[in-house]
Image 1: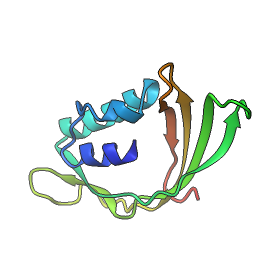
Image 2: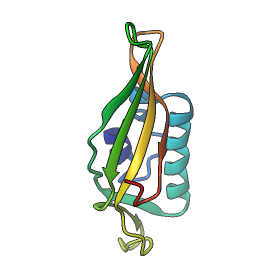
Image 3: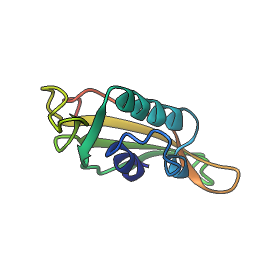
Length: 124
């Protein structure tokens, strides 16, 4: 999901069909809305986050249908820029931040992120 979001963020392509490949529900809505806001405000995102996700819980344990994934992502080299002149959009540095995601098994057997939360820089 994050790789597709990074790719879409390079042009703020809020309509990217790839976003729905690994995201659904609230997660897909939030990804699209964030990209639309950047598009509307003339922003793009350059670089990539550093991610090291791990599974923190499985429900139910024997035949999982929902998994909670946690990470301490690093956005130091994944920042917003003005699309018109390539300048940084603000003076806010990236950094390490807690990320939690709910990943659910879909009716077709695929796993998709249903919801996620990215906390403020410095939360991990």
